[in-house]
Length: 119
Length: 113
View 1 (cartoon, chains in turn green, blue):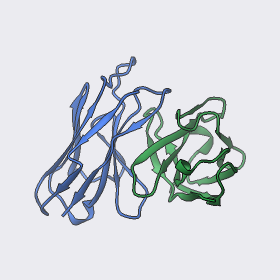
View 2: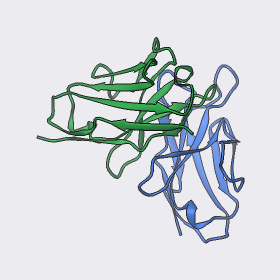
View 3: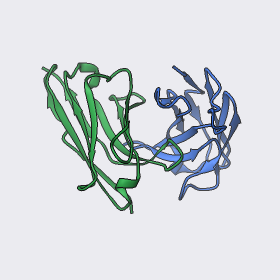
């Protein structure tokens, strides 16, 4: 079955960087676009970024554009999110999610990894 | 940017009774390819979101048939025909029609018994 396991979250100071990872299994990873979606504590969902199946096309939410880079390694079935110049408002649970083929919709989601931004 | 507005934000429900959540978009969600990319997600307490419905009315794999989606243009509805205890949680609508300018979620509707 589809499994997505995020890692890399933790406590980081404002202005510092963090790289999140997502290990995928149970489906054809190289055949699927992938998303990152975040959820601040007690708040709603916010889409962050998406990457095409081959990694050549990437799109970002305006709130993170220029500070965040999504990437993937299809040889390792891994998805990444490099976050730089972190701000207090970036604190959230970060979920990776597989895209529903042809649906432009995150279908399967991981359990998430928590990022806390604090001095 | 398309704004998604859900009503109500909180909905007390009775087990065995129907429930309905509305989602309205600030612009038509009909994509140039003719498809409307409107989805519904359920998030149970302490869990990640779960896809229920995509493209307005298509139930995702494993989703009980008591869940149904409908609507067109800017107005959409998620219906639960008979609420069960496991349906407690927060429900979100999401549009992807404006992609690649972004995917937008509604604020969420809390369903509570």
